[in-house]
Image: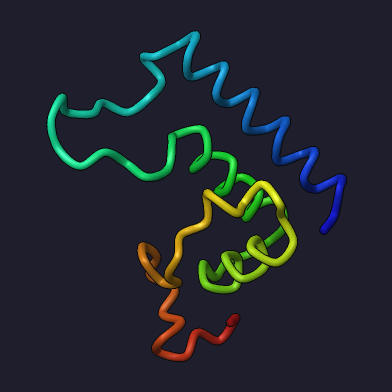
Length: 96
């Protein structure tokens, strides 16, 4: 675990969450009915920003790294790899 990285992740999450609460027009529109997202917008922005800052291009590699090195990711990281990206990890992603 990297305490500085966890501190950055926490600060980024809190800042993003407060921004989205104070400026709700920045958040994406959601229908009143339907499946509730399992990850908040602030959590998603935090994970995407950290992945970009750390230089991860492959979602599968990022999720493995985050689960191993980020305490804050225990609830946020998806349970299965390759759920949303076109990384192609199952097809032999060259960066994974």
